[in-house]
Length: 249
Ligand code: NAP
View (tube, rainbow, N blue to C red):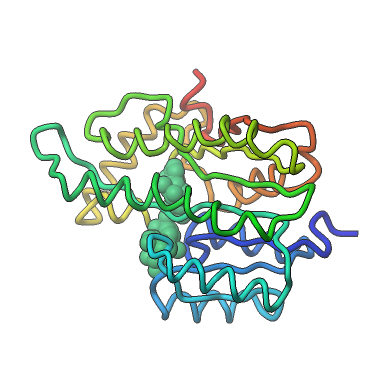
């Protein structure tokens, strides 16, 4: 039997990068996956790629009405949720001099505020034995110039995992964070305006990674599968670092 046979999972930002790799892996392991993102074109592509054991929806995780609609769709189609992966996020660099209230609010709204209400709205559908995976970042424990807002949002997720591990224990629901290092996904493009700037950024990061390479989204999917499944049954409130050693050495 596959690791997630018969399970129902929901993934925010499941149409690209790490979220899409997690969706592919969960489907391959027997789950039915509900995933969503804002761009309809990416939603359609994900639906085509993943096939009948996935339901791809257009929804913005920062909009309550959209999340209510996602919850209603899951309730109607499956009735329950076993796994939540809160993955949607953005990175924007800003030094203390260039940081604006708009940048700060946008980063916190998506990366730190939305996961709280995503979990609040989906929790009534969650079963005993359920698992919540919050996609944080190795940056929650490192200091990188230009990441005042981003790193703080990821530290907030680390904190939610601790609080919710305690708060949800009587419901039999585990909560952990997955903290990727530098993973080769489209999010890196959002930090570099040109291919040359992207290469310079990657080279800067490579100097800090003991394994000497960027991570792959599929490697994060392996880690997410571990946290989502009973393989990690004795873990809650924990943080799993998938960072090539960058945060460790
Ligand atoms: P990505 O390829 O840019 O994917 C981001 C996903 O989030 C897309 O599906 C995007 O779709 C969705 N999204 C963005 N805003 C959304 C919104 N308001 N509502 C719903 N969906 C939204 O990025 P990634 O690298 O896979 O990153 C995934 C997560 O991993 C993020 O939380 C990121 O902070 C974290 N992470 C990444 C790295 C890395 O190096 N890649 C490292 C550490 C942590 P739409 O744009 O169509 O909405």
